[in-house]
Length: 153
Length: 406
Image 1: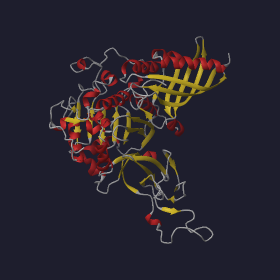
Image 2: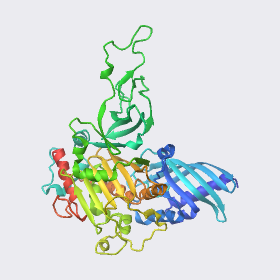
Image 3: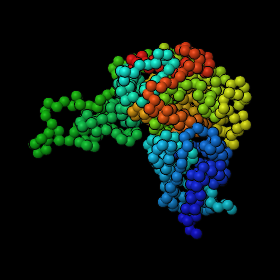
């Protein structure tokens, strides 16, 4: 299997975990130490450090997943990731990967809309369980988020 | 609109037509955002050098905030004086002069028209009339006032000086955060919410909801009615400060009534709430609303301005600018960035707010004459030393009705 095929499989699993609502499995796709960020293209381009979501450990990923699944109050919705243009390069035991993502969001009484589009800038490692994320930076393009981002991208 | 009258019960009732009616919205733009008010437009640290500019808003109007060669911050409508083309489309930048791409009219940092191609014609033909006066055709200036790091703009010549506009009482709260220390910009978050702009101000003035809606506030005691708290308002009722202290994750008379209290909830990584006291006094959170477009957030160690841009009666944009102080050490900056997880379009607390006000807007649809009830704490308007009250909402709507003539 080529690296690209391996990455495609990984991103398919990744999107399924979120889109199916199995957020409690989301932290399992990372390895400690890890970093997860959602950051606007604006902050990213200007070198500003603020994230829209920031998790600096598996514990923080679990706290966020729990909050998204159980604690936050938001309208019921469907999410659908589309992850494309996947590229990766393996170097000394770690894989740098990039991909485009689009998240479609469907809210009650409304047409499906695009929540946001952007790029994943990821670092993955090989583990006995398969590829896992060491670092995931989701850089979204939107100048304005429509509503809120209620789950991890 | 004229057929509609405010409910007889007064300021403790708010009719839903003020959140949906197009004519009310136009009146708000005219009397409030383009009237004698100061709108927040920038932080000075966004424009450190001469020639730095940012795009901002007063009401619906796009404005440019610019630091001139003399270091003074000025403001202009973001519109070429020639054909109305929006001059800047990026969010910020650095220039020596502004040039409209359409016909290349060029302005200096003070907004003066400096030149245009073909002014004297080409090969002896065409050109602008000799009497065309450059001095009359600069960018449209707006009034700007800056105080200790934050910058405000006004479209009205009648607006009082900034200090008089906020008043001594509210300035004391303002000065607690903007205390003269240089600020450090941490970044932006921006969102559009499908709700009336007043709902986000209400959200901050509505002290009770924080103890009920938000599991994170309730459980970890960040903002809860059983903690020592105060509501402070200016005499117009439009500017408000809600002051509170962090409490404990304990079952008591207050938390027992909060369905969102989770006694067993523990963070897997408690660094999120590794808060330190950094301001004088006992308050660990002060949420300020400065009429008409600024929410100033000091929740533990997360500081942000939230700028409101109205987009019709049923939508507004919320621009969050997170900041710290230039003197912060690396640990404090990390703490601020971590606690920023609570706030913004993906905030563990703010998600609930954005969602609930959109849900309120859904409730208003086709129910123009139904009303909200703001009677917690009676029908008083006075400052009070607890948060089990809607007093800041009543005072707000009393002030709003005065401004709007409703």
